[in-house]
Length: 256
Image (cartoon, rainbow, N blue to C red; front, side, top):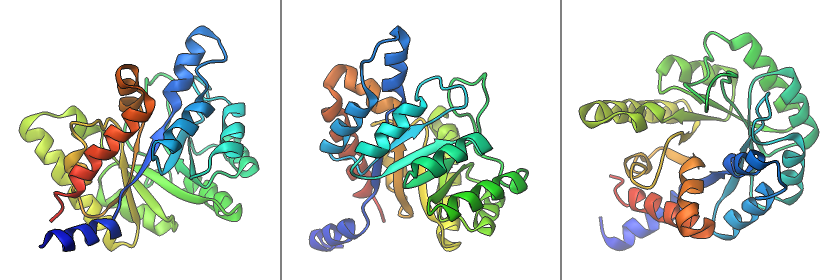
C-alpha cells in the first residue's frame, strides 16, 4: 500500500478517543475541596483533541456526583458518554440529563474499579429494560462486555448500537498470555463487526500497550482515563491527551 493510500485509509478509519475524567473527581474528593474541577478537565481534554468525555456515575458516588454530570451535560461540546450500572436510579438520571451515550457496566461496591464485563446473557431481562428506557429517551447504548461471542451475540439481540470490549485481561497479562488475550480481542472485534455492532474498547490501556489494540481494524473508539490522568501529573493534561492520541495513531498505522 502506498503512503498516500495509507493516509487516505487512515483518515477514513479514525479511532475516537474518549477521555474518562473520573479520577480528577477522585483527587478533588480526597480533600473535600472544589478543585480540581472535572468540568474544567473535560474542557482541557476537548481543547487537546479528545473526541468525547466519559464519566462514570457510580451508585456510591465515590468520584463523580450528580451535579458533575449535570454540569458536564451543560458544557461538553463533543460527546458525553455516561458509564452506569443497569439500575432504575441511574437510568432515571440519564433520562433527565440526556447524555449522548450510556455505557452499561457491572458495578460492585467493594471493587476499586470496574472488574470484568457485563453479563448480558445472564442479566438480559434487567438490561433490556434499561436499554428500552434509554432508546425511548433517544440515548445511544453501549454495553461493556468481555471479548466473548455469547456476550456479543446477546448484545446484538438486544438491539444496542455498540459494545465496548473489556481490555483489562490483556493489560494485566504478560508474554504469551498477553498475546492470547490480544487474539481473543481481535476475534471478538471481528465477530462484533460482522454482527453490525460498532466496536469500542477500554480498561487498563496506556501509551505503551494501546498500539496493538489500535491496530485492530474494527476498533472505532477507545475509552481511556486513569493512564491519561496519571500521565498528566508529569506532563500536564493537554500533553497527556496528545501523547495518548499519538500512541493510538501509531497503532492505526500498523493496521493490515
